[in-house]
Image 1 (cartoon, rainbow, N blue to C red):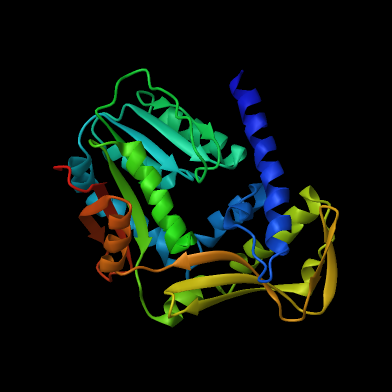
Image 2: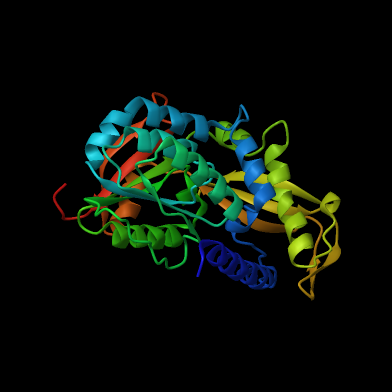
Length: 325
């Protein structure tokens, strides 16, 4: 099977999952849709725009951490790693990492958006001609069959920046960290970005930017369902809501109905009450100890941590528990 055919097959499977997951999610007493479906081509573009908003601190803070500590991170990882990145996106952070690492053998980006994957790999292949590019168009939350690099790596480094782990409920995050533990073996490591706990005003502003880009990103899911699932949502009758749940330590983002209404999706009818929300994303904020405790449940230990001066964000290096670093 050619690379193009593989991408088409993967995208078809994703589309089938989209319909099933949406119908199941909207059939629940508390409606919800997995956050991964926010990232179609338009959603990915809007997310890149979110990262440029003045209220959205995570991206620029993490980039600064990578830039400031890249040599220490490279020394901690060691030479000749294979870099496996979950949800590679535009690849801006990847450029900083690959540039710092000592003789990276190969780069395996796992990305659900074929267009985003193609663009980032094309750019990285030019910038890093000695690094084998092995893109994988897939959903990283599902079992993966990883490609084999031409050169034998000394270790595997899972790179999971952007605080994306915070989009998962705790048990699901532990499950994903457990998958990482399996991917890295005993010699590898995982470099994970986490958003740290801070005051409510700062957190809520990041998910309710004044320009309305985050709202457009969230509501784009309605347009995607209209286009791909033969739905008849009227986006003007819904709004974006992102609030900080202090008890759970996370932002909870909903698409909220402005009125009682009935909507058709994939041949099914769903009733929405006025003020009823569809949960589309969690964004968990961690303490250092809370994250370490969660990683321990997956058989991982935080061996090194890099943060900014204001303690807004952190990059955590994880290794298997009980295995010498």
